[in-house]
Length: 439
Image (cartoon, rainbow, N blue to C red; front, side, top):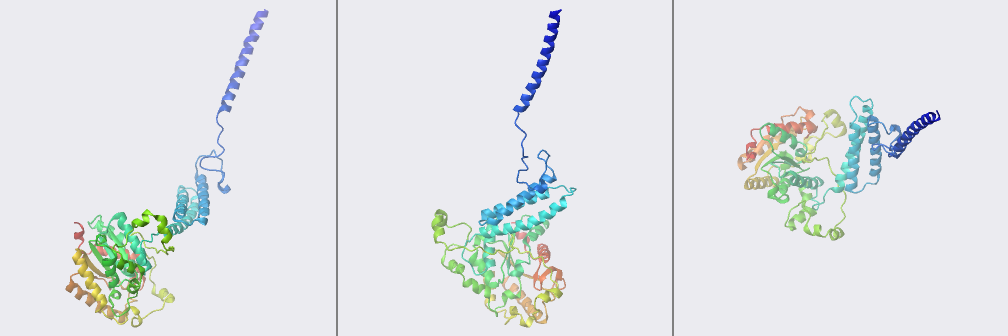
């Protein structure tokens, strides 16, 4: 009897012991595991409290917003102390990352409107950072040529050549050319017309006369940097030998021109060997370089202008100058130094096997008053005479858009819309020897 009761209690105690042991072992195993992290890898303790949420929640729009705002705050702090190109590059990357996070919210998310507005704000900061990065890293490859736009275009063109090669088509001329022919639209239109792969660059320079164009083609650029086809876009201003050529005068007086006269090599993006081999010495003797004020010229040398010309509002801000008082037509003379520069350009391009065409760009009705129109008629006759005598192409578009102010930025310059339309028109022109580019 006693033995049976003992066996019963022994079995019961064993069961209880095993159960407690199992619970203990289970508890010990749990405590041996690594603790749950206090922070999510996506959100740390510096997250803005406005968007704070439990760390165990999966990635959501709230998480994305917190990351975007945190990244924006960090980037804004970097921008306060940025000085070098590398620091501004880091600022630009920070704003780009914040924009990407803001743009990652789904279209149906109620937070998206806020996020889109913030992203737009960040874009404006990104543009500033890119401008600062560009200005602080813009290479000083040559002494100034007396024209900030010419200095800038030279570097942009050499960088373009180093990146994609010599263009097939070089657009050149004054500010009317710079913002009047869009090379990217020209490329696209030519590809559609059966000329894929054609590369175009716009080397327009404010105030470029025939003398300036001749200088760029023959003195500044080397023959291996020149294209198969040159489209010189401009108007009568470039050929008026009766007025002072201020742009070319500044070039002649510039340190860059003196360097060209004494140096055997032309401008290049490659640093000289002595500078590359001993940078400390070069920096010690080099004059201080100021940060240039860069324009909005794009990677293809084109300056896009969005404004639309409205005579009523334009002449409230600017004086209306009649043709008889316009300095561009002062002592109008088409037989002189600019004509000799034209002859030099034609002879040079023919010797190099380069096709040359002159595009007489459109002018608005508001610009072509009776005095200007009379002088422009003389210029049209001059172009045709020179074309027949010297053998270059002329495309005369002077009055084709006289009543279409929406295509102009001001009375004499096309805007971005006009530049795109003109580029498509040139691509479809049968006068221009596009077939020569295929070979």
